[in-house]
Image 1 (cartoon, rainbow, N blue to C red):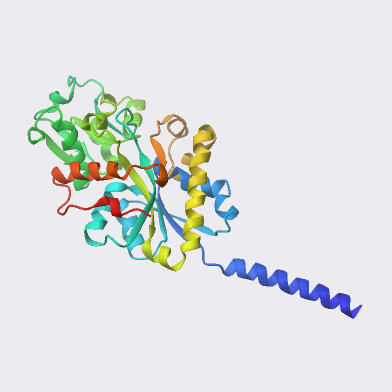
Image 2: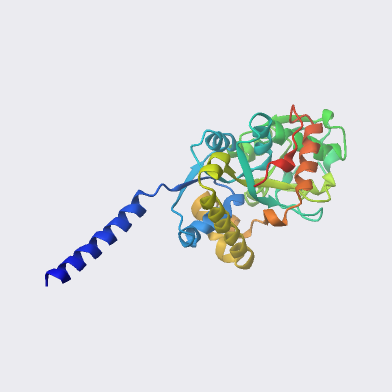
Length: 315
């Protein structure tokens, strides 16, 4: 009897120890923006992929690309999932060894572009990009947003003839409705929402195809902090596996994955279920020259002070 009690006691002790070890495990801190590009992070959490790989994940929302990048470089988060690729290039000018990109979102050819649109008021007489000469065009704040708009407009007219106005994302549609700008160049779903509200219409639905970047455009990326990679390389490998599995799930079950956008981003359900996607691109599928060509285009437009070899920024 005493022996039986001892065995039971030992079992309870071992179970308690295991439970305590799990509870004490430091979670992997994953920062995310409330945007479509972060969908693999949401899927990995909701489908249990992190747990399947033995990871305890803590998802931390951020409201801007600047804030999430600062958190990664300062070591407050282990991983970004995801933010605009252009933000990583800004960081690379001063801290090129502080992160490594391991997953991307964008296009792999000239044929695709579901990320941006150019929108005018519903009753605007403007018929094409040439009609923007002398007009006010809204962009999201930041040098890269303006540079990208300039590069697109340059394919038709001199962007120096256009007045660019930086507008915070939540205000873009109301500013257009009020006539304070004549058009806006912005990521989706801004265009979709403007049209759904009866405020705007598409002037150009897929403007980035005009840039003739034949290898496509990596618009967003996921990345590890270098500190995390150095201190916990096995966890980093398993985290990449989780997000790659999430990409596979999205490819096979897109309709089932879309509702997670409602939960994590706050998008209206009709928008979340219909907004067109670009592609989530695993690192093994990615042509690194595409990133360099995109960077070089923005560099020529003056978005960056220093040229960066972007091919060295990957995991």
